[in-house]
Amino acid sequence: MYELSGVTKLYTRGKSTVTALDGVDLTIAAGDRLVIQGPTGGGKSTLLQMLGALDRPTSGEIVLDGTDLAKLSEARLTRVRSETIGIVFQSFNLIPTLTAQENVETALVPLGVKTKDRRERAAEALASVGLGERLGHLPSEMSGGQQQRVAIARALVKQPKVLLADEPTGNLDESMRDEIMDVLTRMWKELGLTFVMVTHDSAIAKKAPRLATIRKGRISIRENAEA
Image 1 (cartoon, rainbow, N blue to C red):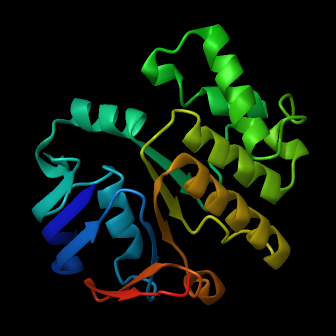
Image 2: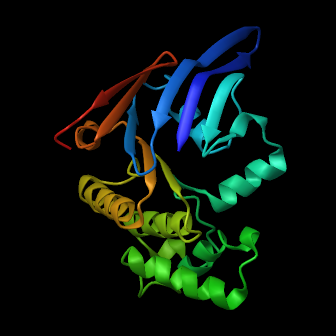
């Protein structure tokens, strides 16, 4: 699925250069579930952006299913994101003036899916995350946990191979956190997804089959046979 070789990302801040990723080598097989942890500013979100084709490395290779993302044009990167990768963010990123169903449908518009099919697929996706009766509700009419479920449905409605999640439970209390993790884990299993998640939550990290820790741009991997 993913093969990262010597991935380095440098940012310029004023007169100084910051190394966000420093020669990262990483393999993520199809169907893996990987959790990424580390201190703030250590490179976690930068790595997720690379996996999501949202940013390019300064050097190194990011190969997804045999294609080096770093060498693709912007148009092809957009296509990869639209077809292959679903992303869930901490802040939900829902459009406040659209209903739950309409928010989910937005993921299908770039794929040219017809209106009738978009509506049907969005309704099915919302039902799969337990929101089958909330199709017509606006984000302001839903709890934080429900809004994150909408965001998950939006990420999955296009039937991606990869699901990336950047602190998806960061804005939720403990009970909502557990509910969202149950949804994400169930979707990973049922859909056969490759699932990569960034989190500060040690309770979530302890349950991960694979845990990547990033500190000062360098990565280490630990396998958890009991997860």
